[in-house]
Length: 442
Ligand code: SAH
Ligand code: SF4
Ligand code: F3S
Image 1 (cartoon, rainbow, N blue to C red):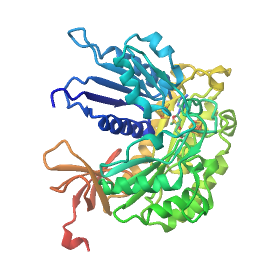
Image 2: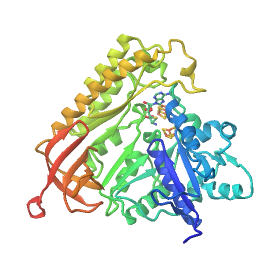
Image 3: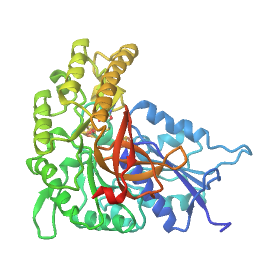
């Protein structure tokens, strides 16, 4: 094995970025490379970057700098992901250490690009080719218990703060048969749960094997028929693209988990308009209620931006109000970060950092309180938990509840097992429980 080349892939971004990282690994495996062990120097390092906020993007460059070894040598370095797409050849001017720049729609060519470096070239590939990268990649073989599957990519929404429509390109739906094949391959490889991914996953459309045209609902119902697949999730949805069929599926498809990530971003209609969100606070809350009618125990999660240009104190208070009204079980919240090339970066009324800090703190305190209340509501409940990793204490394992909470329990069960757990305690970000013995579980 001594001359097998090794690689390491570091993914910094969203779930799709993680998915892309896995696929790049599979491509390199197919070329006879292997993943470097922990602590082992890799011959190739792929930095799979995120451009969504300035901090995420800057992290890419500081990580490049850290790859120089004590003896002055360094691995081959490939900059992949959304920073690569946004900066292209400029990235190599910023850092001489970057050998390859490859965008999120071109990474099926990564092995060829790395081969070019061996010939002394510094290739940049940020094409968005008409032939999909998915057709050029090896079939999936193995999977952890919980797998990601990209079904739609790109975004046509153009929220005024967001880089995704530029880094990922126009919205496209992967064809039905490709998705179903990949789902089967993941389940054969060990997956019990699949999360369908798209920057705007609710815009997915396709035609099934009978020539029937439909949206995400049709796909979810078909995937639910795969034996061995126990749980289906999807993310991220846009409130303007949700349809009745998908709402109904939440009440009818047992394998569709009772959790919905549905970002609202802000609680003021004026700000939502400036963000180009295509929905109002009222239409959003009505949508949430309809989902809850279909599935009363649904956990709602969201994303928030504080300090969008022009956001006043009163408008921020409206964000706190929507958090209460939508009764979030969890949420991600961010300070607005101006991104080059987006319309909001040039808007008047950029909000000072101290104001954003204060708003973020208040919002996060409110969200933490609600998460804790939601988690506490599960004390005394019995639920299925999909074990996905080891805990820190000996004999402790961690898994996911149907509502995407982390559940800690002592057990000799293996990763991938689904256990029946009685919940004893709740913290802001997790639950603790005991395994119900098999005989008693019936
Ligand atoms: N496609 C998904 C994910 C987009 S990025 C979606 O539409 O929800 C994830 C989150 O990052 C967004 O929902 C938004 O809350 C946040 N975000 C995007 N651009 C941002 C920016 N410029 N500054 C701060 N947060 C941002
Ligand atoms: Fe970005 Fe808006 Fe598209 Fe989400 S819907 S990826 S926030 S442009
Ligand atoms: Fe980041 Fe690109 Fe995902 S910018 S959030 S890695 S789509």
